[in-house]
Amino acid sequence: MNYATTQINAARHIARAAEKQIKTTTGMRIKVMLCTTEDRKGPQQMLQTIANALGMCADCFTEKTRKREVVELRFLSSLLLRKFYPRVTLMQIAAMYGGQDHTSIINGVTRASNLLDTNEPTFTGKYYKALNTVTKWLKD
Image 1 (cartoon, rainbow, N blue to C red):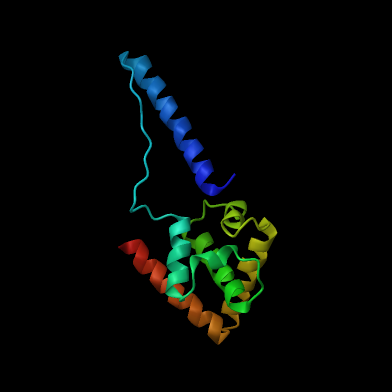
Image 2 (image 1 turned 60 degrees about the vertical axis):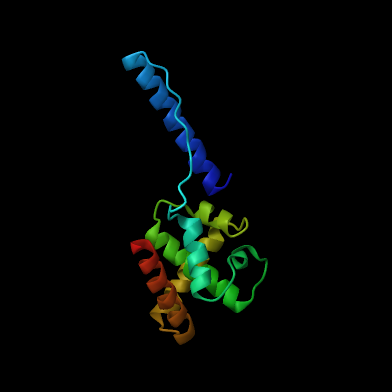
């Protein structure tokens, strides 16, 4: 089950509980409709923003490859997801990357932190470019 499905199921549960509560307290029967908002800024949209900022396609996240630029994209995206969306689990992040294991995400976050700590110039430049883009995107 992916992140979006989990969130939709949780929203349905909340909507049903609200319908029952309103019926119990007022006697009125209502039907709550769920719909998405286009301007919602979620983890999936953040991944697209990061990929665009670095001149890569959003499909790179799910590619089965070990190309350095794709791996670094996943590393820094994992770090930013953990920073800006702390409620997104490692399993959910792994699902966004095409079904990787949660331990791959732990490894990616650790490697990204190590690359930033050692001031590796290429990775650090990509990270700060993505960070600035995401920060600006979240404020808009």
